[in-house]
Image (cartoon, rainbow, N blue to C red):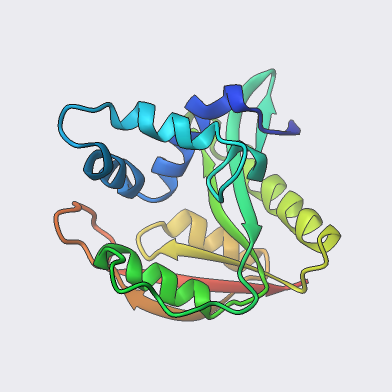
Length: 190
């Protein structure tokens, strides 16, 4: 397995991974952002190929097995002093922002996802180790992540790697179809 920095040309993989990690919430948001006539995947790819912003290829690393992209890590520094949540924020995102605010100054692991055909081959563990390396190098003392209560394999992995549950918030579904009922914030001291 090789881990490499993502490139703008990896945008197609990045949108698949971020959408997979959040059970179609990004796709749901992209559809609402561009309307019924637009291509939500193209919108997501444009965002992933940007040079700046949290959801940018510059914040992502890919694990490859035998030259094929297998898994993704996307993360960045959390705000050290989170401000109030904008009242115009769609309600579906409010619980996530509330949880993120509980881990100020951490290195926030936003996406950890593996294509189905590569699961069980150590990609998640390798990318978690990479996330810790990146966070330490940037001077962070903690790493944080938010997971859905239905992602049982991921929850087992996080706990096995020393992440501890800090808080939970109910999932706001609206017209987003998902089985999850809670978002869970995890922290790990570095």
